[in-house]
Length: 501
RNA sequence: GGGUGGAUAGCUCAGUCGGUAGAGCAGCGGCCUUUUAAGCCGUUGGUCCUGGGUUCGAGUCCCAGUCCACCUACCA
Image 1 (cartoon, rainbow, N blue to C red):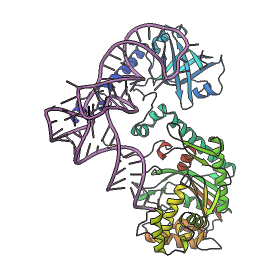
Image 2: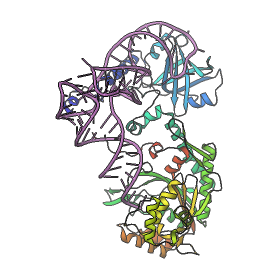
Image 3: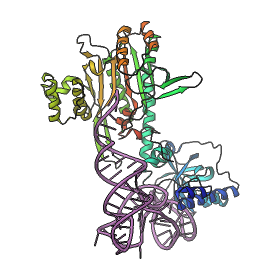
Image 4: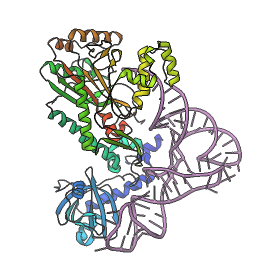
């Protein structure tokens, strides 16, 4: 292996074998030929009048004089007439390339083009005999020669290694992927607009933190050379957003990346996008209302309504989520009783463990009694709930940092929103008593190596307004709304294990 | 960590009972002036993941390893 590599010529991927080198050589030959013809194969400025997708699908009319550009994604060679598709993320438009229309000189240039090249086409629009909106090429401009072949035009990129590491190839080849990301981009922009319309200010707070706080998670560690100090990538923006509320930002949000040093799975990427929003003088029930409005707004605007259909790659319907309002609200204990028996909370801890066996819920001996109940909740309620449920009346053990309910101090003023078998968003009535907050944080820090953020506690002593707060896992929300079965399909460059070199 | 499945042409995939490697796409050559997975004729292209083993003979069976996907566990 090593010898082969050292003897190989200046081929960028000698290991790919002889066949690929042949394909590469053909494209290099055409590159040279373009230069002989006095054409810069890597183009330059090209002013377009339209993008391919909108020209074909929105504003098309016959007889327009247009200049469009895109990547050649299909070539249908009929001899003296060729039909080619020019594509980008906006869509595609067909160009009609005819030797007589183009002239012999430009035709010779055209003959050096391949699928994958970027091309500008100028000419009149017309409809072909089959009714396809097209541009009759009068002039062509080479914008970039592609020196490597694209994936199979029909099956697209299937290899997950290529799909995620070389996302650009996936985006060129797979309409499903393009659609996921167009929707994600539109939805994220709409979330910002939705909150801004309600008077929320978007801010950016530190991702490099001295004391990582605001969530229970293991952080990534890094180091600042000039300051000579270890630092952490944030696990949540919460403690900084609350400082801003102390400073008078009464409606504030941040929509950006957080980092958690944990396992990777279908639902977990080590860096993920989260929305956190805080609303002064509100409580968790108003936050629930806000989330419900927001998610329904997105569904109606980008998913065609409140029935969200999930389909697999073959287009078969796999799941339907009904977001019709109002969303169900149910107390934690009631949900447990409905799946584990009305007598669940009357049982002894030992009896509850025995019941888990009957229910097929796996538990481990080290679990506390409330964790046994939580396990039942996760397996039999959360994972099986497709339509939205706001889980309320949550026991305080599960959310130790939340504000206690005024009437029942075994509960906290929190909701947990479950959709599509996963927690999408928690909402809180925020704790703003600095003494209670200190107590909780110090207690939490006692068991872990976690430090207490003294600057945050100091800020609270100056007075943070009462407030409601929410977090929304944006990646999981997008998965739910688009039907993506893995987080990798809606994160442009998901984290992968390093490839062995 | 445990389990299941997978790795064959540049891409997407077949490969029967163990008998000398196949298709479509892409490429190359030819025909074709309204096609759209264009079509037709011809053609190039292989370390069947790696290393052992069984066998007259291994893509195929056995063992070990590497990588990938999914499930599960851990973490929270």
